[in-house]
Image 1 (spheres, protein in one colour):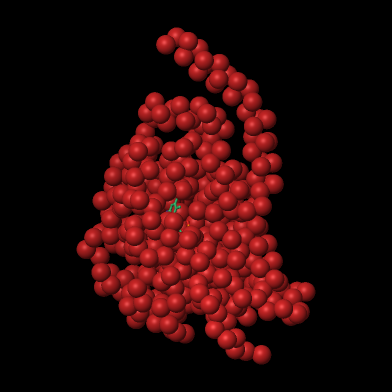
Image 2 (cartoon, helix red, strand yellow):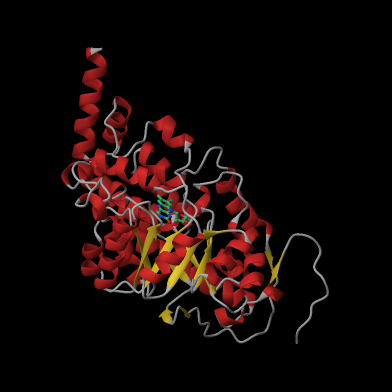
Length: 416
Ligand SMILES: Cc1cc2nc3c(=O)[nH]c(=O)nc-3n(C[C@H](O)[C@H](O)[C@H](O)COP(=O)(O)O)c2cc1C
């Protein structure tokens, strides 16, 4: 036993000595990364398993996580040749806001667990890339902190929690801080089972077990960050009725998910929020219609990145029917499984106006803080530009169903 302790102590000393060197190596790894998959690998190396798997994982057997990716792989692109693509334009607009590329930062809660830059780092990365960041209600930095630290276009995401008073307070703060749109997530009547989190003993706030301590020792950069600048609670609600320590905040928030919420509650939210409203988490075209009839300006076709109902269909699979049902009555975005610029092309070709990315930027954050998230967005934008050129499409506005084909033989080409 004493040998084991001695070994552990010497490893800790070595790790601490190597900290600056390791830090630089991690930064170089991020700078060299050329794909979201490589950023993901860098995050896996930088983070304790329990933290990486919280980001990477999904509900139950993770079928929907995999299906989100696999269904993109099944779709092929049909390029045109000898088109002048010397100046491709990947910019677009969403809800009247110009953005440099149709890639928006998805809301992801508690990012202070991943890196002390947290949501401030993600907002800075998205703004640096000329786009929008969506701040989750469950963020580890407050609405006001993020708006002050990164004054670019922001959307605010909330849930239809039981206590409408809390939701009203949050959206009033978001409006005062200049957030341009409200995103309401409708696919969480309760939190789902996440087996990887259960097996890892992951909880909110993180519990310091022997295993988490050992994981932390093997990732001294993350650990020293976590110990010196802890951001482990839902900052927006910590000062409210949830009150007190991180344990009571986590329990309070969990009790707020409302299995009795219906479309009438959405009508309430529509009344309470003056600006554009985005409904996130619909897959069925009938739900998309319900959202639009109750005043949504946009819907996000999403299965929460496979983190809610396992076995739900992929978001790319659900997209065409939603686009058909909505027509021009609202904008349609997609999230879930975007890992390449060519995935964005596929989603646009199937009718989405823009895509949101969740894990990709959080992997970037884990791998290298705000700079890592920025590198991730840079990669996706570069890939999108390259894909457009190779596809013979001079701008994202010219991507349509003619360039996107489902598996199987292609039918005779139309068009000039
Ligand atoms: C770590 C993590 C935390 C998340 N937290 C939230 C959240 O607080 N609110 C929300 O609406 N969606 C949340 N999501 C879901 C994302 O907004 C998005 O729907 C999903 O990540 C898209 O799939 P992708 O990760 O394949 O891009 C979270 C996702 C991850 C990975």
